[in-house]
Length: 304
Image (cartoon, rainbow, N blue to C red):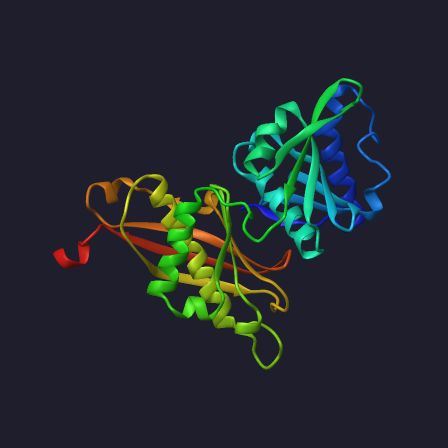
């Protein structure tokens, strides 16, 4: 299980910068300390940790102007590349930029990273100065609008949102929306104002509903990716609440947490899937949902 965290303690920051140096500076024979610059104290830092608490990805955001936020120092451990963690970091940094009113994000991408940033919605706008005297870079920009949050397969995402609203009308009343889908990670959000209790926090039942739909949505998109169809139903679930939700309810499901096989469905048999959904209040983890879903083949209920 992967989690996005903010390095806060002295030890966490030490490990954070050590990882950045190892990934981005050590290969070029630059000494420790070269990974830092004058913006560290005014930047927002994020890291992805595994189930053991080890850092496996990092990234940083700072503001050049109130309208422009710059992404720098994105790095993912080689053993974890290709799992969507880079996009997970960029997404976390983009959320910060949007929440603070930025109109655009910029980055000076290495040539080897250009395709990655293109997949995150950035566009090449020119050449940037070389780094470390030898790394050619391209200046890239992403304008931040309500319509360009990171969505892979937007047609599937629109179909999923429509399915929720048409088959589960309460989801629209709760303000539950698909926020982003990277192919590896699905994030949903809900309106706090539409789910607030007398204590000024989100109803526990609403948190459970957000988690359930997030897991349901991940399986829906995985079926689409394999050109399969079926009826998705929740079989069992367990949720642990750690903290109340007081600002921005978010549900996050990583494809790495999904366990199950599609082969039985291809043979006309029902098949189970287990997964985990992390619930956040902004960037802070507040609950963990573990669900068991069953996918029934089309018209399976009519055959029983």
